[in-house]
Length: 178
View 1 (cartoon, rainbow, N blue to C red):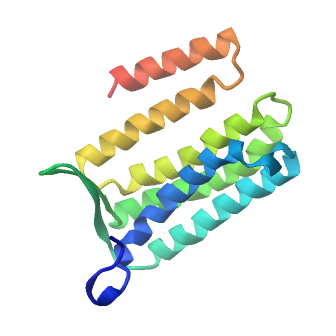
View 2 (view 1 turned 90 degrees about the horizontal axis):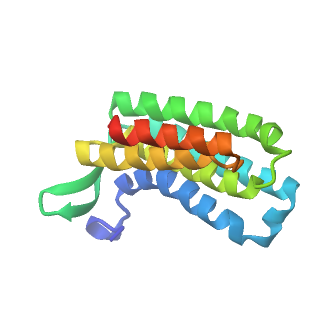
């Protein structure tokens, strides 16, 4: 799958890394026993965001790439592209999400469900990057809905009635406003 002509890896596949790496790392966070320790959790999240940022910088510095990740139907596919607007968006997302990650450690330190929050936070970093590189309406819509679901989980993470009410309102506006 990853090899092109002559057995070389197609360079377009690099576009999947800043999407899938934080999503997979976020999904694995609750399963890694060391992440029970807050200092390791901070190191883990910081490293994931730093690696994602390095790959995004690599993408920003290289020519436009486009790849079809997979076909849903014959004429319907999930497609990613790094044109100038996509590069601008993923640069902004990476910068803001990296700084937000630093702030999050202080913000979340008194919360009971820090690992769950950071799990969704990391996954959202990859999903937002996928949204930024979406090359067609289908890809954009799929990633937009995933961002809405992740945003809901971030809003309700404290599990209070107020947070749940705010999360439901957010989800309503996200789904019915789309």
